[in-house]
Amino acid sequence: MEEINYIDIFEIKKNLKGSFIGKNLYYEEKVDSTNTLARDLASKNAKSGSAVIADCQEKGRGRNGKIWTSPCGRNIYMSIILKPKFNPETAQGMTIIAAVSAADAIAEVASLEPQIKWPNDILIGNKKVSGILTEMGTQNMTIDYIVVGIGMNVNILEEDMDAGIKDIATSLLIESKKTNGSERFLDRNKLIASILNKFDKYYEMFLSTGLSSVLGYYQKYFGMMGKTIEINIKDRRVAGQVVGIDSKGALLLKTGENELETIVFGEVYL
Ligand code: BTN
Image 1: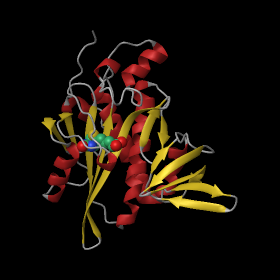
Image 2 (image 1 turned 180 degrees about the vertical axis):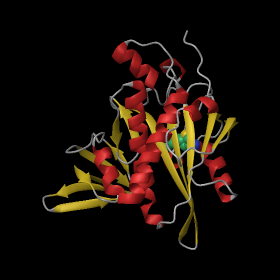
Image 3 (image 1 turned 135 degrees about the vertical axis):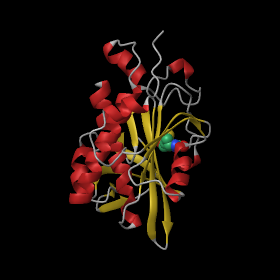
């Protein structure tokens, strides 16, 4: 049916606008996990701002020890290496930056309307289209490197998805067919360049004015405000109403008349 869209590093580079993120690109057709390779490269001498891209992953990793299904030729698997000088606590900001960058790229290149489910799932119409796995290497309480892994379902079709995820996952192509009847493959090279360009913009903003400026853009896609949710925090489950995001990117949940919980990590159930 549709034409194949190959990943082409020259095509990606042609569309890069930033001066830092994506300046060095590593491409492998098949890897275990771009996050694992990026961590390995980061602990050697890879420069901050480099990105590792693969056409498929044999051991793609999701959050909470889950597998990230990563077939060849269809989707985006990319990990950005950062070696910032700030305190490890601010690393959560990188996940926020990645989420808003991925959402911007989807809106720009695919003309779809993504929403962000805190902290880092990108949804279209309640189904997940992209996820982020941020990992960190530290030495003596300082950051050695941060690796921000972004997975995006781009051209995968419903019939090719694993049975276990069909009900909860979607792809940009599936959603484009629904909204504008388009059968054409989306250009992974343009999407990758767009994610890197946005990341460059928001990372620069984060360094110069802090996370709160980036959160202004995040809010645009934040679909959870006012909703009643349940959230798993380690071994307890908390229910409440979402009332906002704080300046460090934590979720603010109203759990009682006068009770507010600030949640830094957790798995949300809408
Ligand atoms: C999640 O939502 O659970 C996070 C998924 C993250 C998947 C990406 S794909 C690129 C990078 N390499 C990995 O092994 N995982 C991340």
